[in-house]
Image (cartoon, rainbow, N blue to C red; front, side, top):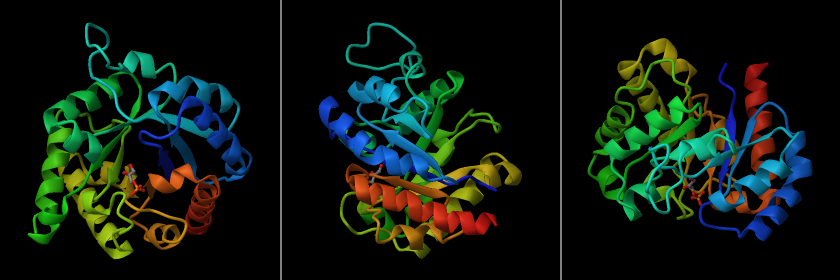
Length: 256
Ligand code: 13P
C-alpha cells in the first residue's frame, strides 16, 4: 500500500516572518492528521526556521529546487549537501523551473541523481502544456520527460513523481479526476517500462494543478492518485489542513 502524500509548494511566497506565522497557524491541526505524509516546501530562506518549528512534529520539509554540484563557484545556487541538513525532499523539474528558467531534461536528470546520492527524496514534476494536450501529444511529452529525467537512475531509488499539467497550474482549472487518473496510470505504465512493474506499483505519483479543498476528495478517490502537490491553496492554513484531512479520510478507507 502506497502512503499518500500531500505536499505544499509555497513557491516564491512568504518572507521568513510570514512563513513562521503560516506554519504556526496550521501546525496544531496539521500535526494531528494521521495516515498521510505531510510535507511543506517553503522558500530556501525559511527552511532552517521551519526545521526548528517542526522539530518533534509529524510534518516534513522539502526544498523547491537545488543545483547538482556539491560545492563550488556557483553564485546563487544551493547544493544537496546544504539541503540534506535542512530537509528530506526536493522538488525538481517543476514546470516553472523548466519554462521560466530554461531547465532542460538533462539538467533535471543531473539534479535527480545528485539528490539521490545525498539521500534526498526528489519529487520529479512532469506535465504537458495546453497546446501539447490539444494536439494529442501529452503522453509523448510526459514519456520523454520521464525517460530523460530518470536516465541512469537505479530502480530501487526512493523518488516521488508529480503529474502537473502546465495548463492547470495556478489557473483555477484543475484536470478532471479522470484526466489526472488516466495520465497517472500512463506514468505508472511508463515507469514499469523504465524500471519494472513491481517497482512502478510502489512509486507514489501525485497530482498538482489548482488543487483545492473543493476538488481534493474527488481527486484522491481515484486509486491511481497517491496525493497532491498543492500550490496556492497551501498558503491558506485552513484550506491546506482541510485538504490534508480529506486525503487522510479517503485514503484511510482504502487502507482498511
Ligand atoms: P497551484 O495549486 O497554485 O495550481 O500550483 C500547483 C503547483 O505548481 C504545485 O507545485
